[in-house]
Image 1 (cartoon, rainbow, N blue to C red):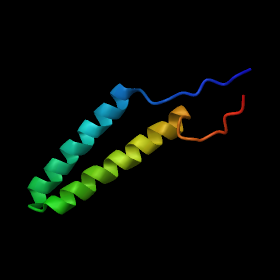
Image 2 (cartoon, one colour):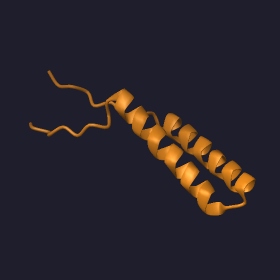
Image 3 (cartoon, rainbow, N blue to C red):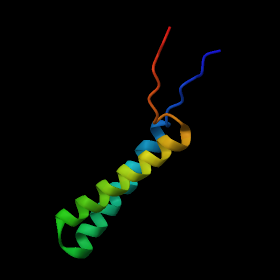
Length: 66
């Protein structure tokens, strides 16, 4: 029996990316430092998308044998 490899929904990834960009902009405006905004936004996106991939099970790489 073959296992179906699940992937995170593009809508979820797009939503998390939008939230990450918004967090980055807010941090950049509040601190008047663009670098901190980029760090905050990129960190949120990386951690959130990674957690979604782990939750769905699409983050693991499995060998594909016929």
